[in-house]
Structures are given as C-alpha cells and as structure tokens.
Image (cartoon, rainbow, N blue to C red; front, side, top):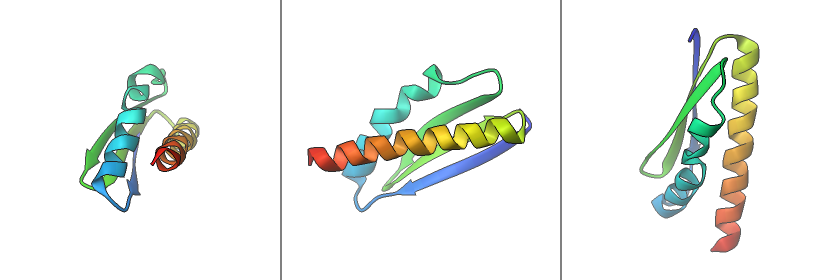
Length: 81
C-alpha cells in the first residue's frame, strides 16, 4: 500500500494497555478492506496501531475507525475496573 500511519495510545499502566489491545486486536483482520489494512500491538503501556492505506481518503477513514475502536475499548476497560 502507498501510505502508512502509526497511531500510539499511551496508558497509565500496562494492565490497561493490555486490556485495550486484547479488546481490539481481533478487529484488525475483520475490518481490513481493499484500501486499508491495520495491525495492533502493545509495547509496555502503549497500544500501537499500524495502518497501511492506498490513498489519503482510505487512511483518514481507517484512522477514524481505529480511534473510535480504541476509545470504546478504553472507556469500557476503565468502567470495568
């Protein structure tokens, strides 16, 4: 793909980062399309989403999708504590 972006979400502790990462990891394969693909990983207290897209519009859509998914997972994980 032609365009790449990396989104990083940092948390207060690695347990919260782990919960968020596990909550969204499976979505990476399920929501990939013809114009964008993403992978999710965690490094300590940071969840990292790597996005590959074919064009700027696809990249923008993928970034919005992943920010929404991470946000929902984060809110749920915090509420469940």
